[in-house]
Image 1 (cartoon, rainbow, N blue to C red):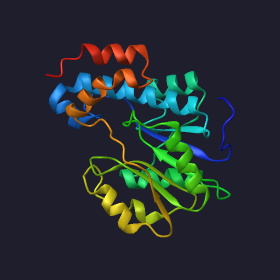
Image 2 (cartoon, helix red, strand yellow):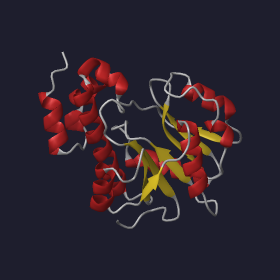
Image 3 (cartoon, one colour):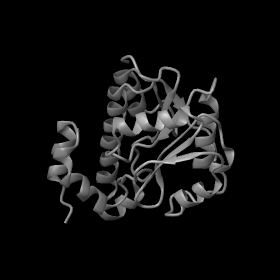
Length: 222
C-alpha cells in the first residue's frame, strides 16, 4: 500500500459478499438477481481500488457475512488490505462496532460503503480534515441516506434505532449529532435501475476499469 496522507487514520469500507439475493435487492427487482449481484461486485472492486489508489489513509475492508468469502480473500490479497469481520444484529450495530474497534488516540475514522462510484479523493481529504478538528462529517446521499460518515469520537446514538435502508436515515442521523458537524455536498449511489442508467451515461467521465465499463455498455436497461 502506498504512503498515505493520514497514516494513523482509517477508511473503513463496509461491503457484503456478492451473493445473489443478498445484495442490491432493490436493483434486482428491475434487472434480476444475476445482474444486480454482478453490478455489486464491480462497484465494490471499483471502490476498493479507488480508495487504495487515493492514498488518503489506510484502508480496512469490513466484510459480511464472513471474511472467508472468496471475493474478500481475493480483494485482500490483490490490494494488500486487511479484512475485518462485521459484527452485530443490524447495520447500526455493525457500524458502531467497527468504528469503536478502530478509533484510537483521537485519530479519525471515515466509514463508507461501496455503492457510490462518484466518491472522489477530495471528499475523503475534506472528511479527514473535518474529523481531525473534532467534527462529525457526513456526505448525504441524494436518496435520503448517506454515503460517508466520519468522526474521531464515537457517537453511539447515531447507530441506534435508525430506519436503515429508508429515505429518513440522513435526517434521523442529523437530529442526533452532537457537537460540530460538517456536511459535504450530496452524492448519489446505485440502488435502483435509474441509478444504473445514470452510471452508464457517466461511465466515460469516471475512472471505471475497462471490464466494468464494457459490462455497463452491454446491459439492456430499457
